[in-house]
Each structure stands twice: as C-alpha cells, then as structure tokens.
Length: 170
Image (tube, rainbow, N blue to C red; front, side, top):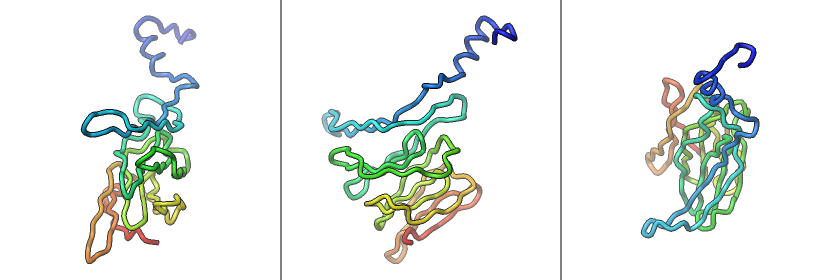
C-alpha cells in the first residue's frame, strides 16, 4: 500500500480485507432450553483461519441431532460429534484434503451412520467416528436428505448438477 501510495478510504478498505495471521474463528455450539431460553451447555471447538470475501465463510450447516448426539462441521471443516446432554466431545475427524476452507452442508444421520460433505461426502460410524466410506463429489453446497423405501434409509446429496442417492451402510 505504501509503495503504491494508496491512502484514505481506499487504504482502509483494502486493509480491512487483509486478515491478520491470528484471524481464527472458533466454532461455538450452544444448547438452550426451548422454554426459558437459558443456556444448558456451551462448547467452544477450536476453529480455523478465517479469510474474508468468499474465500472462507467457515461452516454454516445446521447441526444434526440424532440418538443423543449432535453432529456438526466446525469452522475448519472438521467433523464433530458431541453428547447432546452434556456437550462433551465424543469424536472429531478431519474431512477432505484440508485445502477447502468452508462447507455449508449439514450432517445427516440414520442407521448408525453420520455423513456430511466437505467435499468429499464422508460416512462415519455415528458412535465412534470411524470413517466407513468416502464418495468424491465435484461440488455440494446443499444439505442432504434422508429417503426411506421398503425399510431402508438412503442419503440423498447434490453433486454439481446431479443428485446422488447412496445406501449409507458400508
């Protein structure tokens, strides 16, 4: 900025877009009483580097609550499973190559499998966090859905212009 003699409002605007090396965003999860609005528990999970202007919005998917557990993506695209009663971490796992900095998909859980797209689409054992399968996706910004047919659950995800339907059991 000095070298190019950028000053005034333009300088301030450019400076506001350049993150400090310490610009990290933690993931904060709150469990609240629906009747009173009081906080039951709060969990702060280590976050990742936050870069402005479409480079990193962190994770913005809605947490999934199933069978006493809360599944979510953190700001560093790390999968977390928390105990729904206490907020204590049950397991966590990195997703993808680590090159992506954001994901906007929500977890989905059925039949002992919890899955989310980083991308890739990853299925975890819902209780242990062990990766069960990994399905490459070109692009997936939408949240998944569960479809049941003849007693079997299927996960339905978007992959670019295609819709993918997978049996979650390995």
